[in-house]
Image 1 (cartoon, rainbow, N blue to C red):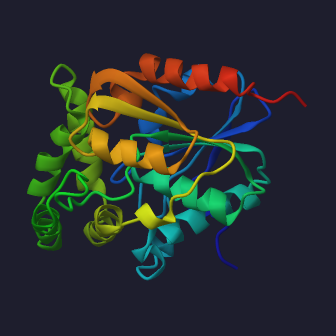
Image 2: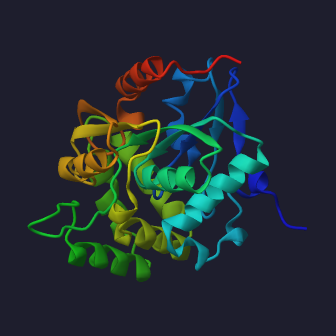
Length: 274
């Protein structure tokens, strides 16, 4: 008998509330990256955090390269976690690639999800000049993947400061770099390939209720144009731009990120009362 999704994904259920608020981490991270933001919500919600297979304290033996060759595989993982934990009416908070994963999961199982909160989302990271700016030239991403294929950890030292982009908090950049380096290299490369080479632009269409989208003023991973593309495709969505840099506002500026989320929650009258 195999492991349950709760065991497989190291699922943690905490908080004093009843409506679930699920936090899904980005590429190369794990659920500990939410530790600065979760305290703002654990008194009102049931807080759900987890590690994708191949990340953090998940069961690495459950990794299947074919399943995780597309974001749909990760979306199915989210749905499996929700069903195993008997979660419904979920407020899904996704960072970076998990924004698209959460959107796909909500399309896959609309009965489980209430609202989406998408932090620095991108539907495609690859530039297609002159029509679309995703943040990276394809050859740059292929160079990054080539480094990972060679098991050269130089990619981690390059990518971590670019993601955090917060010179006054070098410890956060170091934490992210350490997280990258701790990952199984084969699994990390597969997740990177799935993250950075996926194109979900055609998957996007309005969803009800419209989500909250949080962007940062200066983000070198998901530039303003890429996030505004998501905003336009998700008609009616709320776009909140934080006057900060970087791609990890939940780590570098949790108070500002929590304030943006709280404003949306109040408008949507969340959490729901039983």
